[in-house]
Image 1 (tube, rainbow, N blue to C red):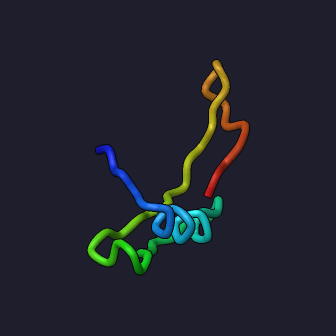
Image 2: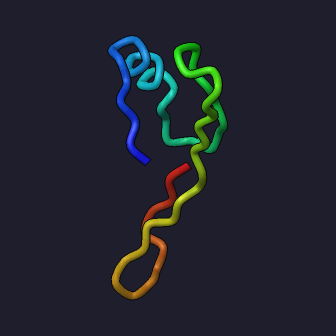
Length: 53
């Protein structure tokens, strides 16, 4: 999916983007729900080296 956002929407989205698990919407895009999910970053041996969210 590709979205084109105006400056206000970008600013509202930037305020909400944090590396933590959550669902949110922004006033400029009321019909869209964003969801940040837990992600495990793995090395080449499949060991978890970092968890985001």
